Image 1 (tube, rainbow, N blue to C red):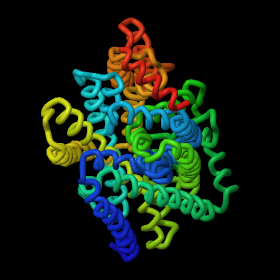
Image 2 (tube, rainbow, N blue to C red):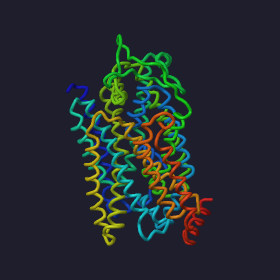
Image 3 (tube, rainbow, N blue to C red):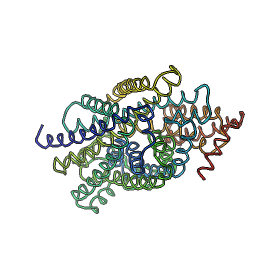
Image 4 (tube, helix red, strand yellow):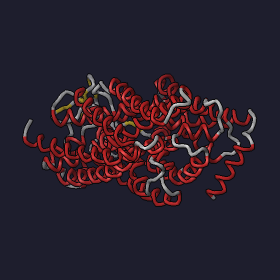
Length: 519
């Protein structure tokens, strides 16, 4: 290991130490009760709410996945996805945040998403809560594995050590940190990590553009590749045996592919996922004052727009700097790491690469915590042991964290995994399972318990059906599974609710009280 690598390691260890200190500082307060551990006692301020929501949402795919897609096939796929995410972010904060904050407090002072859905429909038999908790466990375990893949790729690329060992080191660190501090530590550190992430992106794109000879040279190179610098076309790398061909020192591309209306709608559908994303929705529920959510919305939207724009451009710059260094879609996700190590002093590189670690930690701790709460609070205490004490719930949550981490590690053992692909599936799962139900629960008085159950099962099930059976057929059916699953869930909610008895007068009165308070 050379001196530069050692300096990078020292810087990153220092960063990780700061994160652990945050966990220790909040450990005592977090362990006062399960309410404090899982939702922080609804005490978040507007800046922490906004920045922690977006940091926990973006994960490693912001610094690795998005630049990797842009490096591999050009502007269109990454840009339309980014646009959908930016619009989804804004609309979610605008439409959902305030009403969910009020409704979650009104509906039994709910502290988890399954709690809210169950209390919203005044369940006696906790069917909605159980279904929601099971889907959260499934999709967040997959989501957490994508973060561990990012950790493994980062440490393996930096230090030249085996991927699996490095992935496990990252998993142990995240697990330890999450067990210590809970929601408050997670939110405060995510605020810090959101700042690190956006600074890292901006520094890398400025240094990279300068090293490539300026903006004009970057654009000229992108335009020289068929379909690479187009919004309605896409580059098609020539691949043989899983690697892009290199001819005379230059990467080989085929003719530009078309990027039509269906492609655009499919990628922009990413934005629909926000309406069902637990790690973001919990921040809405956890803010101390509902009136502060307007400020949070502005902060979050600006952060997302800047971060996604820069992330896409890093991939374009990386293709100009290192045209033949990353020869597969999986390797392309290392472009941010390659640029940082090659262009910066090791100490600065360590700080910038901490941005990837920040993105990974800020997401994985959220995923693990929410999944643990789904089991310990909603399944263990809600169904299996209804008389469980708060102390027993806390113990079970920590045991659940360990089990989920072990499962996520087993999923993440393949170092050829593409982070963007893993994230897209889990994102579709949450968006289709909870997104329609959240919108109808907040804005449609006629939705009933049967409609809620049908919507969750239809949305979550259709993600698997479309991904595994329908999408491989290709053609017009090759669209992102979130869109058809989201629409199918909406249809089932409306149809089943209208075909069955309306909700009780108590449920309707509660809905009206929240509606008038939000007006």
